[in-house]
Length: 84
Image (cartoon, rainbow, N blue to C red; front, side, top):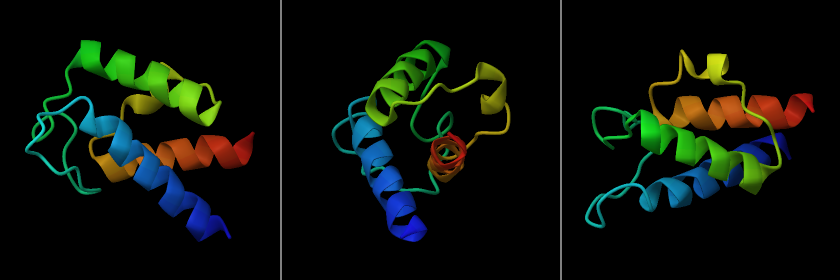
């Protein structure tokens, strides 16, 4: 059950990231948020607000320090969801 929850989180995150990138880019879990998807600090704050609304969680800004890829962000979201 936990793996399907994680996969659903990853799928939803990729869908959200689609709206932050150009239409010709297919978001994959191993993509770099900064280098490949061009998520800057303003986009990141907007993304975090959407994530918090979508998943009904609160993402501490200091938890984003180690987040570099889409998968890292999905891991963080999943961790926060399971701890709450």
